[in-house]
Image 1 (cartoon, one colour):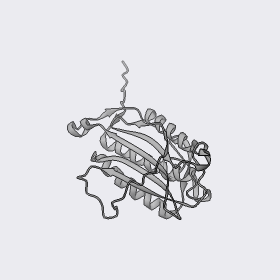
Image 2 (cartoon, rainbow, N blue to C red):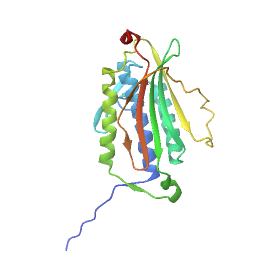
Image 3 (tube, rainbow, N blue to C red):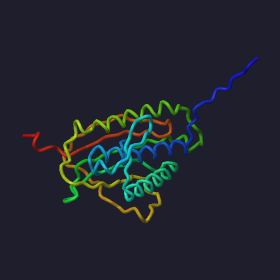
Image 4 (cartoon, helix red, strand yellow):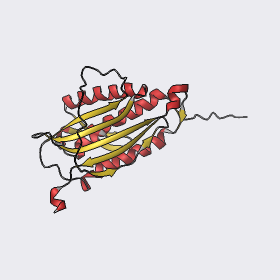
Length: 213
């Protein structure tokens, strides 16, 4: 009799950390997370991005070597903290280049399954299901231009990481204020869950004074 082996989708701590840290890399710099935010919010010119495909979606990846190096180093550090269960939140802030006023604050809160660290267990969830959840967030970021105020001035960005207090911080990272926005508008986006790390997404932005009149 023929037999068939069924492979389960096992998510390990290291695999989950890799998924989440890669997600942050693409969100900022391409038309995905950090990359996606930078492109869709016009922080860098369109011609500085090149087309790639990730998570089953067309995206744009920055060709700026300085930004690429920054995000590569960033995601490597985030992955290390995720594997250690020490990362609580990642925040990307977009600021006015002229005044450093915070215009947008992209908040990614991270919940970690404590049993994975305490007992060394793994979890089951298919890559396809995780990808669908990430795709939903990426599509929301891409559509953010329809509800976020136009950034009509040169902008810069920074990334804040909230960790446990006992974490050793590399010398390349410095203490920072939370870079909050007074009386912001807020929009909650979709979340995604690897069964080890759950990421909830919220964008807050400066009120458009013209809309309030």
